[in-house]
Image (cartoon, rainbow, N blue to C red):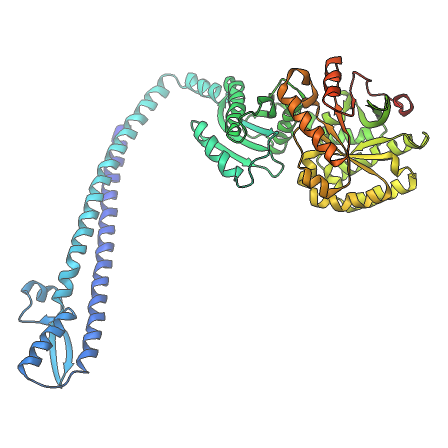
Amino acid sequence: MRRLVKADKEIFTGWGMRAVIGVVWLLVNGALWQFTHAQVVQQAGQLQSHLTQLDVSSSAQQVGEFSTLIRHYGFISEDQAAPVWLWATESVTFQFAEQTLALSPAPILEDCLPVVLFMNLLILGAGYLLSRWMGGLSRSELSSSQARAITSELTPTSITRAQAVEESRKVSVFAMVKWRLALPDDLDPQNHFNVTLARCFSKYERCSCKYLSSGALVMTLAPVDKVDVDTLARRIHEVIYQALLSFRPDLSRSAVKCGVCFYAKGADQAMVYQVVRSALSIAQSNVWQHVHIMPLNHTLSTSLRRAESEIIDDIKAGRFMLFFQPLFGFAQQDVIQSEALLRVRHRSLGLMSAGQFIHKIHQADHLMMLDKTMVCHALKALSKEPAGFSVSVNLHVLNWSNRDFVAWLSEQVIVSDRAKDIAFELTLQDFYQYEAYCAQEFARLSELGCRFVLDHVNAPVKIESLREFGNITALKLAFELIHEVHHSAKRRSVVRQVVAQAKSLGIPVYAVGVETKEEFECITNLGVDGAQGYYFSAPLLQLEQSL
């Protein structure tokens, strides 16, 4: 019975296709006929207009000119037209010299005939090929459906289980990549990486990427087998690295960091973004690990939903500590400044640094509350110390773009009466991105006596931008640039360039994350003015201990 139904369906599909082809044929021929008729009407109107302007004369010469004229407009007399045209079309009447002339549009029809024949042959050929293709498709569908029916009748349970297992192994991969390299100004990063990734990951059904204004590249690949996620993550890192080599041949793999999150169908995209940012942060904080992979499972999803609110609740409840990292000046042979570091006591994760939880906070009011807490407690600790003790504070870049926060910050600095002992730190990348706005807000605080330090310097700076800006008082070299710098000639070269630029600007250069004697001796020989790190001291709880 099933075969009979399938056969009837195939026959019906064949007749339906023939009917569609017939309708298309009729419509096209009707359109051609309307076009031909419009040509006849147009030429007839032009001929009639010309006839009304002719001189009524019957000389032989003018009779010949008259025949040429009507032939020019596509008409001939009825006795000159072939019988088939007289049968197919009606003659057109004209008024000339108080006489009625009946002329045949046979020349116009002869001109249109090749187009009509070509279109008909084209439709018939396309219809024939389409019907053959549909017939073959119907037969293949019938064969495959019969095979599926036989298979399902034999082992329906085993096939269902196999499909379920196969589906459970498929995940989507979301990756975020950042690099320490300035792309050419004339390059369109979106199109450049679109082409590169489409060529290298063409086997995946879904492959999309987007270049963010922050300088990060995000991409999604799906579906991916779980066992292939690790290999795919490393391939993503390698593809981006190879694509960037064309702009800087000596680029190190450690300059390209990749965070990857893989997740099942139906996952919350906001949580996926949080996880991949966390993975990228871990990769960036590790000198040797360039790729970090994190899954979005139920446990992590639940903790992420509560992460931001729990951290803010801890801060509101006072479950945090303020540490101070001493900065040692080589020329002074003493501590010249201390950096304020916030640590939150999380109920389940323990003592967390700002780098571990800042990427989990997204609401602007929470970021503002976090920085206000940092500033208030740093100023409170500073108030207990004599003049000359200096403290630096690292604030979130979004708060620098909030005029209310900057106004509040200015008021707090004025009330503290310690403006000259306060320095604010901003990463080099954030400074470049918000340079125009920073110039306005920094100028206001600079007038009060505050100083500004560019942190996380990992490449030569744009010296003209800093010279025009004028409010930067120091540069801090990034940890990944300093870590084991004595083993890398390339990084030592970068440090030399930054030191030379700083000298031309008349500002000092400090190193961050110095942990060994070899690193200390190396940066001293390179001309660095000071450093902080575990080689000198771990972060201290009390300000007087660090100073």
